Image (cartoon, rainbow, N blue to C red; front, side, top):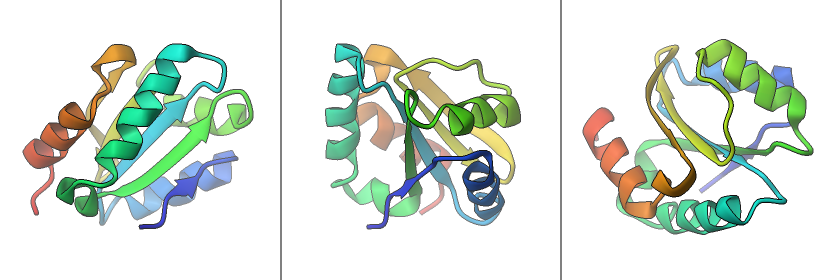
Length: 117
């Protein structure tokens, strides 16, 4: 499975264009936050479940990819938090959550609920 890293506003624009046809799941990670480290472990576990095959996974590290992080917030209208996950398709946010609510099971359930298989 290819996981795209978002570094720039251009990367986000290209990903959101692709999300018109296929659902995208973006993980916004903070390299300095222990809550985000736990969420990242959950994200990685999610990538191994069958529901993960239904989405294009992408991530950014807020300290290193600030431009991309700001672009995601501006384009989606979802206030920035980290850690944070956003599920998008067709130019709109289908679901999002943050912090301790980011679990493998929550991600799988959101994809199962919002993305046809």
